Length: 259
Ligand SMILES: [Zn+2]
Image (cartoon, rainbow, N blue to C red):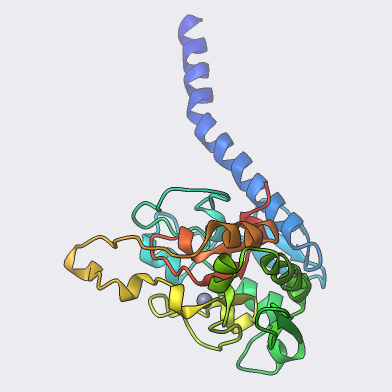
């Protein structure tokens, strides 16, 4: 009898990690659906459903992917595998790049393909930092990104001039190109990312790092915390929280910020 109970208990204990994983997967998908209310309507254990009825698998069935495989071929669930630390945080550990895993089919469906007219149809013009800089910038209106960037701009205008200077002139929004080390479309291809002042920006590829030679990337940043905080409050993650950092870069990824 005791042996049978022990066996039962052992079987239950063996199940626990799977249960924990299942809960966290469901929680991640809840967050994803909540983060994009205009686009997504529901999820179950294996799919998300878009408001137009399209159903997409959340997993590609490939387990044990390497970091490079996740960068190049992320599933929808992979996008959220690394938690993004909002607020103050230490320099990221090696290969901690929360937000750099992106499922191309997901974002193309969301914002369109910049190689066709799809992205262009949703572009609207906003004025970035009307009092400090005042130039027109074209951004997507999908998911309210344009309106959110207007609010970010207004809040940056209220900062001290020395801090504000990091936010203009901007280096760009829409750019239909792949990310250098992933071969996948950047969030700039969807007009849902903005690069701020190039003169105060640091980028891992410029750091003379030579990862191939087995060196680690030395972290550098000159982007003020106050600007990062404003973007995060409006649903944009910051490239300065990546091991492969890009400190002028902000992209709209509310699923990684919502608690
Ligand atoms: Zn960028």
